[in-house]
Image (cartoon, rainbow, N blue to C red; front, side, top):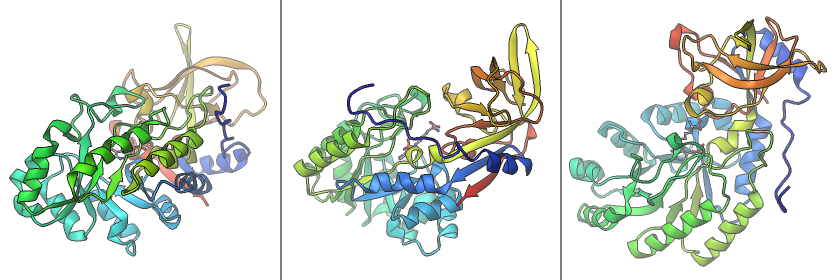
Length: 386
Ligand code: LLP
């Protein structure tokens, strides 16, 4: 154990087996979200003196009960599409536009127009949009997303900085952007960077703030610095909780060095991943060429992260408590693709059989939102535990 690293928190679903089995009876695949866990994680973020505002990246999980929970805690919401914006205002008609960010990527013109008309804070990340649509942005106040020249995160597909990534204005074009903006009477009130998702080093955000604050000091009118999301959660058994103490200390220190700016964070995963589990039912248990497979009624269609990023999620048979016999299983779904695997070499009860309930842990972020109807299989159900 490294000195100072926090111990793992116990998952909420330990001790909720009967309740989860009853929910599974009403149909699987089914996501279940535990709102108290969302609330705790929201408080983790806000209990950081240096953080002035926190926006939940709703792409991780836009379930209405989750949006209500985080906004009740005082968070704002970050949206990346007109669909997300419309969902937010349909779910929370009273939410002031000042509590919503719009940070799209390669969005069509009409989405910027709609967001500006709504009064939400719009972030741009290229000069071409100003050149092509000057009349959309003239006289407006916007934020600028920068590419700080490097990406970070749990997999190459989620690193959002550096030349290979499509996001952000490169630093070499910063001055040119300011000149274009000036010519259109545009005020840049915020600088933004989000370098990726699942970033392990808690000092990362401090470095991003320092970098952006140095740039903001030369840019004139900036009052806000958004250092993105990307805070990780411990998916594997040997991972530790994100070190909030180190994160907070780093932000406090750097905020004291550059106190002029409001500090904004926009986590997605951190707030909701551990709050969600996915319940599946076993369809068939099959041995082939020495490999034992548990087939479930959902796979890459309902939970894409293992297929897309080789992501690791805990997988448990909650129908066989106390059974200590184990077999190394591959857990697969019903989709006609070889990559339809949720986990390999997992020790589960040797007695696992049809209709047992399988729990896939830490699936509250990027689970339901990335589910699809491939093979014309239905989308999962969703439940809330208040
Ligand atoms: N802000 C911006 C501008 C983003 O693009 C994202 C996520 C976030 C905030 C929130 O990042 P988070 O705190 O959740 O890491 N589907 C992938 C993650 C893709 C993240 C996309 N952008 C996964 O399942 O790992």
